[in-house]
Structures are given as C-alpha cells and as structure tokens.
Length: 619
Image 1 (tube, rainbow, N blue to C red):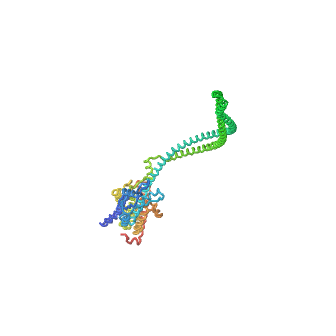
Image 2 (cartoon, helix red, strand yellow; image 1 turned 90 degrees about the horizontal axis):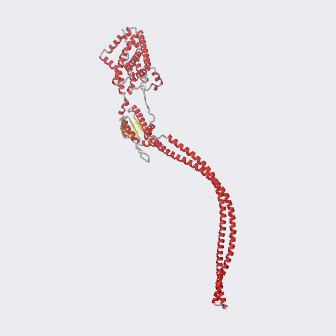
Image 3 (cartoon, rainbow, N blue to C red; image 1 turned 30 degrees about the vertical axis):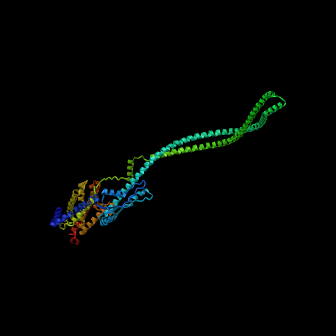
C-alpha cells in the first residue's frame, strides 16, 4: 500500500456516512469560525468607543469674578468639550443617578467634575495652590476593560485640562512679560536721560570746584585786605573822635561868642532908648537927638550885621560839631564793622576751603553716579533685548506651545491598520493549531492495517501526517479568504502569508501526530496542553518580554511564536530575513516531529504493548 492509497483510504473512512461527512465539515470549520468570528468581533473596538455608555456628573460651581479675575467655569468647559468630542456615549447625570446607573450597569464608568474644580485650578495663582481633581468611579463587575478604558479617558481629560490651564497661564505670563518689556523700554529711555544728566552734573561739579577754588583764593586775599581795613578803620575812628572833641570845644566857644553878640544886638534898642533919654535930659531937642541917632544908625546896623554873621558862624560851628560827632560815631561803627567783616571773611575763607573739598568729593561721587547710571542703562537695554518683542498672535502661539510643548510625531516602519489586523497573526496561528487538534479527534494518526501490512514506518508516518496536513491546509486557505475578503485585512505579501499559514498547519499536524503515535489519547491531551502553553508564550497580544522568565524561555522554543512573527513580517511588510529564520525553525519542528512519528511507527511495527491493544479514550 502506497502513501496516496493510505490517504485515500482515510478520506473514504471520514466521508463514509452523512454523519461522518458532517463531523468532518464541522471540524474543518472550527479554525474559520474561531479565527474569523473572533477577529470580526475585535476588528476595530477602539473605533466603537462612542457606543460605550459613560456617566458624566458636572458639579463645578465655577469661580466668580473679583478684581482683575474673569469669572470662569472650567468644569462646564471640560464637559462641553467631552460632549462635543463623542469619544464615548456620554450621559449627563446627577450624582445619585450616576451612582445608581453604575451599580445597575447602565453605564460602564462615571466621571465627576467636583464643585471646587474651577477654584482649585485658579488656586495656582494664589497663596494656597492645590491640585484640582476629577473623580473616576468604575465597576469591574460591569467590565474590567471598561474600567481600564475609563482610567485612560480620565488621563486624557487631565492632560487636556492641564493644557487648557497651562495655555491661559502662559498667555498671562507672556502678556506680563510684554508689559514688562514696554516698561523696561521706558525705563531705559529714562536711564539714558539720567546718564546724560549725571554727565552734565559731573561737568557742573568740576566747574563748581574750580569756582570754589577761585572763591577760596579771593576770600584769602579779601581776608588780608580786611585786616588792613580793620587797622585803618581803627585809626579813622580814633582821629574822628579827636576831631569831634575839638569841634565840640570850638562849638562851645562859638556858642559863647554868639550869645555875647546876641546880647549886644539885643541891648541896642535899650541903649538907643537910654541915649534918647540922656540926650533929652541934656536938653537936646528932637532934631539934634535925631541927628545923633542918625549918626549912630550905621553902628547899630554894623552891630546887627555882625550879630547875624556871628550867629551864622555859630550855627556853622554847631553843624560842624554835629557832623564831627556823626563822623566819629560812623568811624566807630566802621571800625566795628571792619572787625566783623574781617571775622566773616575769615569764616567765609574757611567755608570756601571746605566747599572746595566738598565739591571735589561731590565730583567724585557724581562720577560714580554717572558710571552707575550708565551700567543701569546698559542693564536695562540688555533686559529689554532679553525679552522678545512679541505680538498678540505670537504670544498666542507661544502660550499654546508652552501649554503643550511636546508633540508626538509617530512614524511606523510597518503598520497593521487596526486592532483586528494587529491580532490577526496570533489568532490565525492559534486557529491553525485548534483546527489540526480538532481534526485529530476523528482522523486516525496511523492506520493499524498499514502498520501490519507494511514494513515502511516512514511511509506510514507520512501518510498519517499528510491527511490532516492537507485538510489543515484547506482550513488555512478558507481562513485566509475570510481575513482578506470578509474582514478586509490587507496583506503586503499575500502569497507568503498564505504559505506561512499552510506551513504552520503542516508543522502542527506533524507535532500532534507524533504525540498521538507515542502517547495515544494522552498525546491528544498533551496537544491541548501544548496549545495552552503556546497561547501564553507566542507574544500575540502583549510583548513576550513581559512574560515570566520560564515562559519567556518557552517563547524561543515553541513553534507558534515563530508563526506569529513570520505572519507579521509578511502581512505588514516587515523584515523578510526574519521570515527566513522563522521558516527554518518551523522546518526543524516539522522534520523533527516526523522523525519522532516515524520512530514511533517503527516501534509499533516491531512490538506491541497492551496499550496498543486497548481502545482509545477518544473515539
């Protein structure tokens, strides 16, 4: 009996009745149903989050306006953004309704914006800064992954709020910097004027110092002259006093002479009358007396004239005496004033010397001030240059960049396309194992008739392998058609991908064949155990590096991980060199399993055990 005949015999057995045919078709459909339906259900779950019901509680009281602070309610703004984004099926509820909905499963999780949300966000500008909170309440009894999604959603909300607040804070800061720059510019202009003024002050201080030196020199000369003036004034005062004394004595004599002259003048009328009486007594007549009086009239006139002259002289002498007295008094006052002047000039000279020294110190200080104002101006100019001159549009762009300084630009060497396509390699590899495992429930690993009739263990083993391998290949072709046509997954290398799927099915068939030949029905159970091990070690969902060390070691040994890797490279357009390595490992498993199967058949052809004669636990 040749290999094709053995395969044909087994296929006739599998299709010998309607029930057998139905059983074969049902088992053939297992990998298509498992892989196709699972990947269909998980083709793009992230794109369906808008159907996930989520409760939203908005309790924020907002922040009232006071002073320069604008009234704002961040909670309502966040809620508006969430509702407009349609990331989930949001239901705005009260706190009690949200709690009830989460408990009865009407929503998968709830997000609460508390009453102090806006107040907490604004607190960063006050004396009691503290974080705002967003409350997430989950219920794993509804869905554990929904809770995980809720945590990711709240983290996204947190980042959005942080960006919003950071943008506003950055905008305020940049506006303040712009205002500071304007004020610094004004201060720089003022500092420039101060520099000019300080330099003028230095020049003026130098001129003042020169004038003070000149004043001190002049006052020194004046001090010497004032000393001479004091001596001269003293001499004048002494001489004036002597003149005044002589004039006073002369005035006394003049007064006595004036009195005598006045007495004579005053006595003339009386003497005239006495003379008239005497002449009358002598018997002179009137004409004779008149002649005598006429003769005497010139003398009376001269006496009167002399008296006037004397009185005038006396008046002059009195005036001279009074002037001499005034002169003496003035000379004394002059002498006293000259003394005071000399003292004042001395003090002024001392003050002028002090002034000269002070002005020199002032000039030095003003020079230091000029240097300082120059440094102040230069520093202000540097400060103005250090602050960018920005427009309102530029500040808006800067605040956005500060609030969200890092943009993640993603690029991919290869891309799966969606979640379902990302899982396709793993579930296809797993579906291939499940399909082969299911086929061995009805396919006989080896024909006992062939074992008895033939003495060629290799042909028996190959015949026992090819039947499930060909059926498994048909399963993989059908599954590939579902992935490509029904689910619309794209394949960079479709022929290569299908080839890896068929090669995987061939390898799995060889492995389960060897287990069945060596261990019988226990071998079928070991095939299930091996599937479970590969389910967790193939790295189909999480990276295999996250596995515990013993399981990570199995990843490098068991074949399913290599099937997954090869499909990823071919399906997404990755490194074809890795496909070659994966193919070598699968080939080694295939050849090794067939060798073990042939050895097992050899053992069966040479000797039988009681186990071989017992019926199998599995049909």
